[in-house]
Length: 167
Figure 1 (cartoon, rainbow, N blue to C red):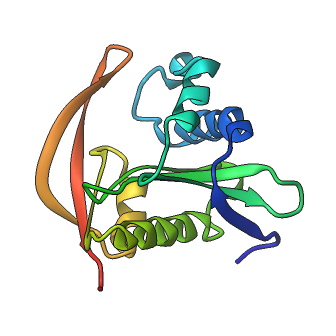
Figure 2 (figure 1 turned 120 degrees about the vertical axis):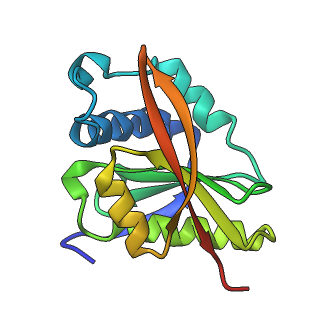
């Protein structure tokens, strides 16, 4: 995979702030289509990340990828079991390109399949071409659905991508 090994495990309360750090680093690196992204980050207060982890309960899944050498959180993924939605996936840009996102995606798909869903849906920013390429390479297709959302006064469009899972 890379010069380092990662372990994928369920998120723990102590992972909350490192998860927030991954998010901040990833959006600073990847969401450059927001003209003032540097001003927007951090987007969430520390208490948000504590609640984010605390409220992620079964049957939903929140997994983290940790560097096996130093137990540092380098990525995370979340699913909503009942709807088959992969609702969040971020990898720290320092370790991007080493297959960590792909590994998290596989684990998320396995969790969704185990919950009895065989179709995964996800939403990604229309302008996030990198994410669309990653998901496309993993077998996801744009299905034509869109929705509009807002972050700190910036409106943006998300596109839906789907993938059928083998039984």
